[in-house]
Length: 503
Image (cartoon, rainbow, N blue to C red; front, side, top):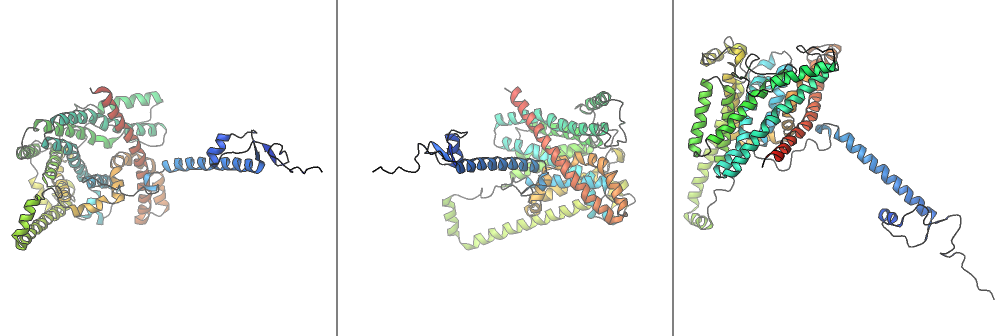
């Protein structure tokens, strides 16, 4: 009797649904994609269809992920998922970054705020007191530039101090002038494309002529040895005609060099003598009408003061002394706690008063307040008579003091720093330089034409202005976000150049 044969064997499985395994399928690819090895010399057609579908779906998902990531990357950070979350570990000076960001925002308001009686009231006026905010810029710069150097001086790390001084001095010019030059370059390109009307710079006949004019302007603007008298006012401060808000850059560079030189000259002094020398230089700068240098040096003083404060738990005694204190009794501990509480209360009270007075002084009326409300007619008489007229910076006598009081109050009272450590505040701080240099370009492209037409279409008035202002600030933050991305590459270029040239 003939034996029955199996209907289908592994060797000759050739039905309509069977396909040879080598037909476009790779063993290794299958095992990599599907996670299971092929154990047969042939594979079912449905398995091939599943593999092809899987690979097609995977590539589609990957392409979509890449597209999604690209679309997210071109958005400003405040529109990205989690873009406004504060970093998990904030530095002790993180509030200064946020303060600088809000100061830059106040500068924007100073240039474009709506004429309103209520906005000119004392204390409210601070939200658009742009010139006082520039003074805050300089104080923060002095603080940040000197903090690390002073810490090395205190720790007697002379080799590291020399390295840091050389690095900071070398990279400072690139950090300031290259970034400012990029902002001016954007302005030139916008003029060339007829996207912006500039009141000073005309559109040349050709791109080469426009570029040549721009390069000549940058050559004059980037002169680090140009005279900086006072620091405010077109006659006394180098500036770029392509970007008229860059007048602070030469003063920023000069003030930075003063900070580095001071740290070098006083690195062998004791902390007390160095503080005395700092205050002596501050007073002399006020006598010399060099207010911007005094502001940088006040930042150095605040950095010195912050380093003099005991670190948390740094003053805990040894275990033996702790045991001895426990034996002294509860009465001594209560007295010490009461004394510390009294000192903290007094410190916070002084900081609060300094903050209130500083905000009030930021509301200085025009013409030094000679014809303003009390007490400005009296305060205007305190301004040194040998200082030059208002356009050269006389108004910065009280504004610089106001800026110093505000930063001092925030530095000495940690509870006042909390709003500046929020996620949105830290984001504004990150954009500070971009907000300052880009708001002029955004204003000339959008505020002067489309947003002006929008205000007219909405009927004018407060509501129309508020709508246009919200759109305007949205665009400013977006442009500032893009600028900061370029600025990061400029900073990285400075570090790369340092590594290539330093030995």
